Length: 131
Image 1: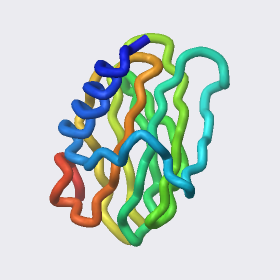
Image 2 (image 1 turned 45 degrees about the vertical axis):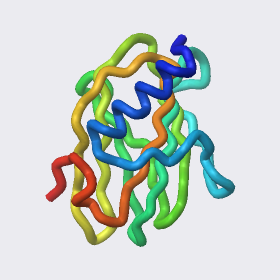
Image 3 (image 1 turned 90 degrees about the horizontal axis):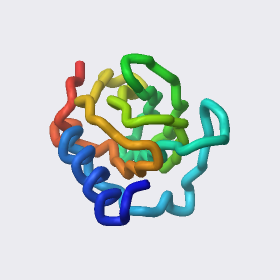
C-alpha cells in the first residue's frame, strides 16, 4: 500500500505526464462512483473532472487491454474504480462529443493508487495525443 506522500507523488506524476490539472482529493458534490471488474481486491481509483462543455467517453488501458469506464458529462466529476492485482502500465483514452479523440502517455501504477485528473477547457494544456 502506498504511503500518503507516495500516493500524492503518483498522482502528481500522472498529472505531469498527461498534463492535466489535479482536481484535488475529493470528487466534489457531483461525483459519482462506479466500480468495474469486481468489488474485491485493491483498486485503482480515478476521479475525472471534466471542465469542458462536451461529454467525455472514457476508457482505460491496463497492460495493453482496453476497458470502457463510461461517460463524464460536461462540467461534471465522476470517480471510477478499476481492480488491479499488480503494478501495471496504465493510460487513459477519451473522446469528446463532436471533438477530438485523445490518448495519454502510459505510466506504471500500483494497486490502491488514486488519480485525480482534469480534462481542461484548453486541450493544448494536455500532454496527450489528440486528433
